[in-house]
Image (cartoon, rainbow, N blue to C red; front, side, top):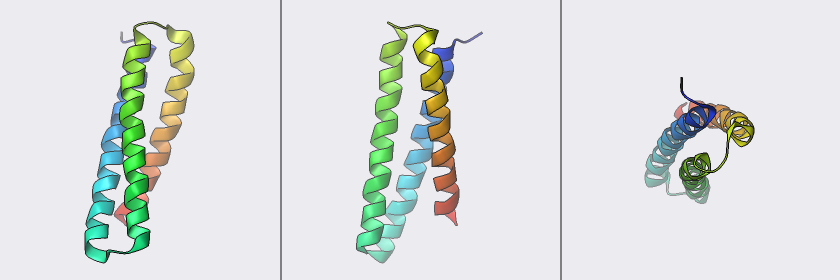
Length: 94
């Protein structure tokens, strides 16, 4: 059975995919509208994407040094982030 680090990395990897989808939605919107607001959304979504990628890298590195005592709260934080990004994706698609 996979450990807590596996689940934390998996949840964060899903966040990477969702943040990329959000970025692509806002990129299409920016190309169509070319407004300051759509550009700001594009920058925000790129920050989410970069942060999610860094989280996956960090968790992979941490998993080599730390145990489940650290992984469990990080998994909870990643799950909350995933919920927020999923909500944002749902809103962006409408």
